[in-house]
Each structure stands twice: as C-alpha cells, then as structure tokens.
Amino acid sequence: MRRNSLARQKDGVGGFFLDIPLFILVLVVLTIFTTSLYHLSDSNRKEETRMELEDKTIGLKNDIQDYEKILFERENTFSIEKLERIEDETIEEELLSHENYRSNVSFQDHERGFERSFGTDLPEENAERKISAYTAPVSMICPNGVDEIGTIEVRVWED
Amino acid sequence: MGRLILNRDSDQGVLSIVDGMMFAVLMVLATLLIFQVMGSPLTEERELRSSEIRREVVQDIQRTALISTIQDTGFINESGPEDSNVIYENITVEEAIKEYHHFDHKEDIDEDLSYDLSRLENDIEDIYRKCALEVSKYNFAVISSYRESDLVLSNIQEINGEEDLPNDRGASSSTLMIGEQQVDLTLHIWR
Image 1: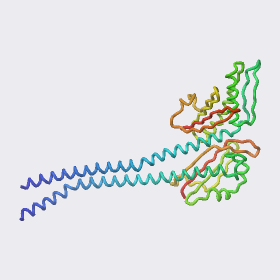
Image 2 (image 1 turned 30 degrees about the vertical axis):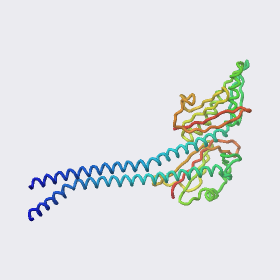
Image 3 (image 1 turned 30 degrees about the horizontal axis):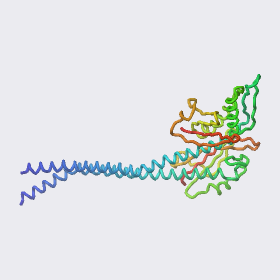
C-alpha cells in the first residue's frame, strides 16, 4: 500500500511538469485566437463606420448639388454671387446639421481665387478621426456671367 | 518497476504535446474559417462600394464637362483655295463635340472637303483634363462615335480605343443628338 501511494505521488509530480509545455501551447494558441477575433471585429467595425461616413458624404454632396439657394439657373452649376451672399448659418442649419456627425463643404474656383467654406472647421491633422472626403468638379458662374470649372469638396467625420 | 512508470509518464507527455498541437491546428483552422466567413462579405461590399463611388465620380465629371463652356475655339476649313478660320465663342463642350462629329463626318463623305479640327479636339480635351485629372485625380478617356466619325481623347497617349483601356475602370455613357442621328459618348476613368 505504501509503495503504491509513493508511486502515485511520483506520477503526479512527473505529470505536472510534463504538462507545462502543453499549457503554454494551449495558452499561446488561445491568445492568438482571441487576438485574431478581436482584430477581425475591430476592423469590421471600422469598415462599417467608414462605409457609413461615405454614404453620408455622397448624400450630402447630392443635397448640395440640388440646393437651389446657391445654384445658378441650371442643375449642378453654382453661382459664385449666391455663394458669396449666403449666410453660413443658412447652409449649416438646412444641410449640415447632423446628430453624431460633423461636416464641412468647401467651394473653390482656382481661376478666380474664390474660396468659400461652410460647416465645422476640420479636425487637426494629428487628431485620430476617420474623415470621409469627396471631391468633384462643378461648373461655377462668375458675376460677369462667365462659367469656370471649380471644385466642391465635402468632408464628413464622426463627432 | 520504477523504470516502467517513468517510461509510461514520458509517453503520456509526448501524447499530451501531440494533443496540444492538434488543438493548435484546430484553432488555426477555426480562425481561418471565421476570417473567411466574416471577412469575405465585407470585402465584397467594399469592392461594390468603391465601384459605386467611382460611378458617382464619373457621372459628376461627365455632367460638369458637358455643360462647361469653351470661351474661344474653332477649326480651319482647308476646303477652298485659301484656308479660313471658323471661330466659336462660348460654346459648351456638348456642342463642341457635336460640331466636331458634324464636320468630321462631312469630310468623310465628301472628298472635296478638308477640315483641321485639332483645335476643337484639344479644347474639348482640356476641359476633361481639368475635370478628371486635375480635380478628381483620375486618368480619363473620352470615346465618342457618330456614323463613321470617331473621337478618342485621353490624357494617356497610348490609348486609341476601348481595347486599350484597363479593365478596372468606371464609365458614364451619354447620348447626344445631331438632328435625328445619335452620338454615343462614353467617359472612362481609372487610377
């Protein structure tokens, strides 16, 4: 009986040390598995946010292209005169006020050196924010009636 | 007796490691499966979204280019004994493309007629260059046809037709009318 009991004790001590590499292996594998799942769900969440921001950006761009208060007589053609006259608050209240999002819209006509921006100031460059941006050429009518190719840039980011 | 017990322990250890490695392999396979199942729909959606955005961009470029005005352009009529300049002022790109095809077609069907349409061609290309390349940062090709008359404009010189275009591109097609005949106009963009 005594001999059997001692043998069992040897078994126990030997078994414990032999299982250490196994524990380490299992631990490493579980850590890798958990980390991978975390990264996958994190990248999915980021991707979904990015797509949501892109949707908002395109939607906002389309709203602006149909916004009569700054358009010339025809579609997709902006009047520089109207852009100069319109109050920031009018556009911000009617187009740029969203819950959870901030946005900025800027118009540029490089030929005339015209630039007008509406909405929230852009976050600082080092701020960790995902910004969705869309740039498109637009036709802009100068006060003298000449039309030029300008740029509209729409940026949307999470609040 | 003691030696026998040690050997058995040693075997058990080896078996445990084999078990562990099997477990590791299974976990890696499970991870790959989860990545495949969860990742591929997102990748597909991402690709779909990119092509949707590019379609939006190409439509914006086409719409803006066609309504843009060329303030001063024209062509040289080389048909008579002396060359004469035909001048257009404040003509839209849409009208300029129609004029190009109209005179190019006339030249094709009547051997006595000869026009140098390069100025008109260059001025149309300049507008597309501004809209596509300078503002939107896309390479572009405009391919337009009316009867036997073809017009191919691109910022890349090697492009002489649709067969030279890359597969991964966005396109917007429009139909213009010269009388009752249609002009098929397509703008292609890519990066």
